[in-house]
View 1 (cartoon, rainbow, N blue to C red):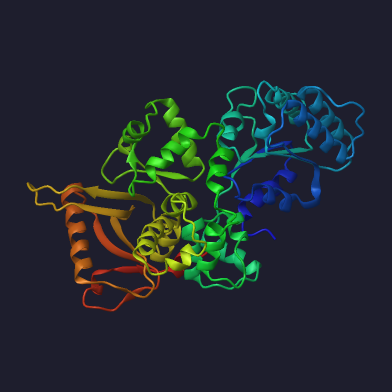
View 2 (spheres, rainbow, N blue to C red):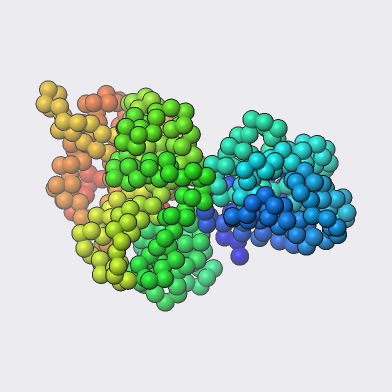
Length: 474
């Protein structure tokens, strides 16, 4: 059963109605459901399907490609020795097909592009010199190696330049989609349990498929990460290697960002990793952003040049916080219930969840139709101006001259807003006004799990967003 993905499914189905042949590239991180989307959408409409071999050389790749052509119904006498001849067989298969639209699905295309293989030359020839001149071909290519897809297909500067009909970046699920997925599996858990699971594994569908019915969240996390045969214990070593051909520099950047809650400037990343501050660093950062591992944000009042890069991938954050330490207790997460270590992690991870659900927060505030920019903001203490220094995680700067200052607080009960919280908020508002010189009205917003408990300081908060708001379908 295909959960959500309505927009992506429509794009794939619309290709069948087009008057000319369509060339579609689908990309996204490992385990996000690219292959499942294509198979479920086209179901029995695939004229040809093939997946590259993870570790095969050119000879083995061509042999496997030819075998897939045979399974699709074409009689092949001799196995070709190069990709140009292999794609000639694919042309023969298409020409012998009697269906109106020939859907060709090539999965893990990057694995087929071995050293000096000639694959891209053959693909260019197949599309530019033959398929694009027809009106009955839908070619869908897919790969987990996002850097390869971006370089070789989507941003190709050679024969495939500007040849794609469309591209689909498949994003992880949001909270609402994760809830829908669990319901489809007839697994009943509370929204706050889903939220805690999301903070550990994000919205990767494969990770959610590992959840076992009847186990608590803590037991499921122990089974996924800390048990002897835990399926996600060693996921980190495969995750980045599957996405990037040479993952070392990418991991170096992730490694330094994992140690910085608020992120680093580009110059700081170059200094701490030893990667030259050049176009190569730009490429790596852009690809990490494209895969959803990091985000780039600007501080209110500063130029884009001073943008900060922050690690946002939930699994990676969980790995660095808990798995990198080589924890041996298979019940580690259950033991950590209500400890300072776990509570600190919950606070940080909840902030990341909020940034992944800004549209839901806007909907909860009733400002979905208002043009906004989302920033973080900080200032250092300054004795001259009397500024004490402040850090604001999220500012929603609205076109109607209002700034929503969002305080994100994870709590297992209704959040009690104390005098200490009120003092901190007042300092943030004063610092923001003094340093940024903004003329906008500042409206404090509390984003928390169960809502705000009535108290003597609770009137300071002008709006409250709860976990239920983060689950809304918009």
